[in-house]
Length: 100
Image (cartoon, rainbow, N blue to C red; front, side, top):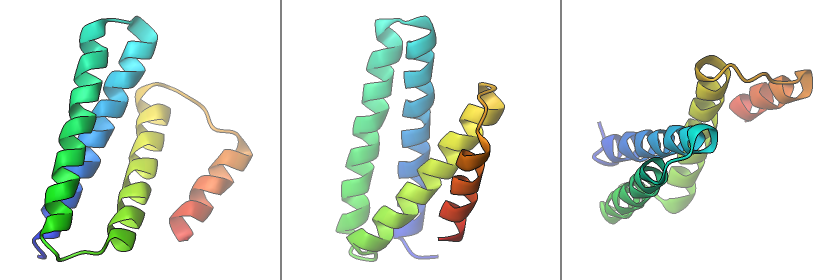
């Protein structure tokens, strides 16, 4: 397994944790939730820099994989974790994004 893969998985995970904390902040408030969300975003960015520093993956490839990972993860969390709904157009867009 390339050395950058675990870093990318960590970046996506940290971003999704930050997204959940941001959603919790939007629902319930609390500076602690907001501060934790910011902290996880910063941790994700530090991990991103380390990953790129390994030299094993280019920015374009890493950016694409990150975007898809976060988009899929956030969609699943929103729909199944928070009971949010998607319109038929949004469902089609999600499928097309995955195929792209």
